[in-house]
Image (tube, rainbow, N blue to C red; front, side, top):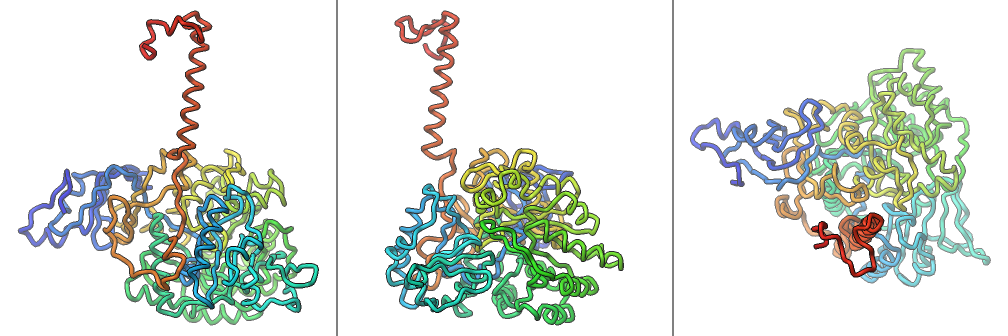
Length: 633
């Protein structure tokens, strides 16, 4: 398609067809991530790879009669984003069943959405709000009450998960889940009861979230065909924010191979719009080694292709070695776990398997490192295979040195965006200032990837995470990390592009816009590098390209991506409300305009006082402004 400034070349030679680009994106402010050529204005793509990066003159020779040329209209383009810790497989299986409060600014609005969804939900189904929000994001700064849930949905079961801390169930959900006065509290959880012994509807993680997740697992699920459609819509939602890759961190209630079948089938049919590197997570305590032995003898990390590939084990290897991330509770004291944990790590290292480990606290990390150092004495560390700690909010400088010495990496998530207030109440503002110590990680040369840990706590919106990396602020607006522990916008973006690629060993072909790299890029609704800091969470993609294929288009580019089938079931919350609830960027809001006007008035008053002090103009007199002031004339 011709676009101003560039037209197809001659059509007579076979060479123009054989070597012409499939896609050219031009007239963009391209940030390549390549230090040798950080800036460009055009990118050409053929057979899923980048074939030219530069200006119009560089891509023109590759424009043929069948080349799609897209004018970015001067917008910012960056490498496709890569969430290094996203529960994308599990999230996709349930996406269309969930009411998303991600981005909702008020509890009043959230309850109105819940009420409307309850009216649309057929008998036997639940309304479920599962992650992506925090009470701190609401103007009211509070959770809904049980009375409000019962009033909004007197007959439809409602399950509302709040972080790793609690779940709220209305009366209908208590009945559907089978909770009675005789239901015992499980280990690590509490069913809050009224004075008569009946459950109130409040479930607490004390400190583990198993009670919350096992209750959610009682809700109805989709059939296989609808799971595939749900996953496709979830991937499109991720593409909406410029995500082109993700590393799936596995997790509880995600069994292999049963729960991986949907993405495997979509990959087989060429319907994935996000590259996925996945991990395997032993599901049953006491059987972890049996699972790991079966896996290491069957597949190897790297098996698969550029769309779907195995990346290793974790984020748990043995259940006993995992700490809990409920910052409203004291740090858990783990029992002895080293013997079984060492067997699991030895098995993986001997079979060249990488792994990732959930560890929120330095106390857990130090215990794990003792095991690794014991194996290092036998020559198993560093072993050439990739391994990393996830989360690491309170990791110490000494532990970072030990991780570096053993060839490890770190994946950080913006859980503090949503749990920062709880962390401060429990551990104090000083501890929150270094949770996690981002600058110390980079100073040691550690490979660091960034992500969200969505969808059950944080939102999957990567720009909320990038804002947290840059600003150090939670969703409440509270500054948690000082300037010394924040990242520049370029550093933060590298963690979200090249950092994730390094964690999967794909940094030669992913994470930068260079010739020979995967053609994964996104054109943004606003310039990430220049918008006011508070506007960063409001950025979206207007064009997302994965492997040279346009998988998402909005605004001027709407309609360029293939349409998806309609959302099913028809009563799905996504069919009514969509996913992330976008709101205007602060710099574009009426409040911001009023603030700018007030600032202008203040500046004007200061100038008048300054002039009055110099006898040029006395405010409140009839003398008027000095005649040499052309602004006032």
